[in-house]
Length: 124
Image 1 (cartoon, rainbow, N blue to C red):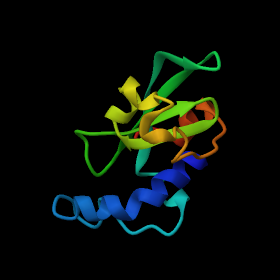
Image 2 (cartoon, rainbow, N blue to C red; image 1 turned 180 degrees about the vertical axis):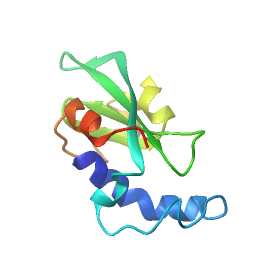
Image 3 (tube, rainbow, N blue to C red; image 1 turned 90 degrees about the horizontal axis):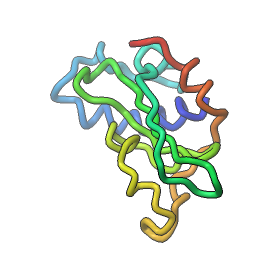
Image 4 (cartoon, helix red, strand yellow; image 1 turned 135 degrees about the horizontal axis):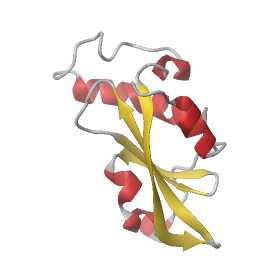
């Protein structure tokens, strides 16, 4: 649920960014995170060599219906979303740096694990 909450949090900004490229039916207004159920889907996982406290960082890709050429991405460590953005967020290992911007956890969200990402998602 936390992944959907995070995507929902950024959804209005994404609507503005894509306003000239999509129709309102492709990216309708939604009132709650569950409104994304038919719009985003699990696309893949990237496991990094980089680790902290003996646990590797992990990137998760999410497809979305309003732009078939791109994806959303998030960088995870243990049970935290360390970064959320475009697909590159899931694969760029420099984003996992504990000293990046002086605070690794500046955009941290709790989540329940890979199982949530997989359940989230049937392909859109």
